[in-house]
Every structure is written in structure tokens, then in C-alpha cells.
Image (cartoon, rainbow, N blue to C red):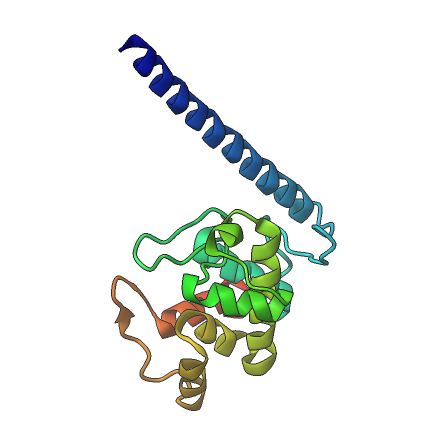
Length: 187
């Protein structure tokens, strides 16, 4: 009986050690990404000028990217939305990750890999946000990110009118878009 108890205890301790090692690995990845971002050096070969401290105000993609990350997760790569399941710094819906990663990287990644790899989050989010920003401008891109590209088209055609209803317990589409513009220094 004591041998079985000791074996079970060893297995649990081994599992706890494994989790600790994985957590340390994730923390090291995040620390490396944070250092790269803060020094505004490329991270894993990808150019970026994103800064956690913020960027100069104005209508630039870097300012837009910073405003989205700030609004969505406060810049936290490990963020997971309890209601929607949205993941990471830019709060990408899990259902979008396979397709968007295939578009951005040429291969599909799992939601777990996405959540635990800051460099992938940056590549995938920047790829999709750049598409939206080029197509719709900052305000329309914010709407596309929050409510989808179809809504962005309708929102822009309506001049933003009619989009003031809260989205459940979250901001209205108009409030979200205007909040992004405000964080960019455009309002």
C-alpha cells in the first residue's frame, strides 16, 4: 500500500514539475518578446516598432496596432476572454486562428501554440490587422476587428449611425471604434 502511495505521489510531483517547466518556458518566451518589443528590435526576424509604452499619436498602423492591443488585452499575450474564448494580446477568436495562421504563415497553428507563442500572435494579428487597416482605414479596421468585415462595410456606409447598442456586456461597435481612434490621438 505504501509503495502504491509513493508511486502515485511521485507521478503527481513529476506532473507538477513538468507544468512548472512549461510555465517557465512560456515566461521566457514572453520575456524575450517583451524585451524585443520594448527595445523596438525585431522579434524572431519580424520587423515591428510596437512599444508597450505607446507610440507617437497619429494615424499610423503602429498606433492602430498599439490601440487594439491596449483595448483588447492591455498588451497581455496570455489573455483569454472568459466569455468568448478570444485569445492573446489581440484577442483573436479561436475559430479564426487556423485560417488566419494559414494565410499569414502558410501553415495552420493550434490555438494552444498560438496562445503560448508571442511571435505567432504578432505575425498573425499584424497580417490581418494590416489588411483591415489598408482596406477600411483606422475606424473601419477597428470595426472589422471587433464585429467583422461585413459589419465594417455597413458601418462605414451608414457613417457609424445605428451602431450604438451595447454588444451584450461589452461596448457598442461605435464606442469601440471611437475608443481606438481616441487611443491613437485622432479624437
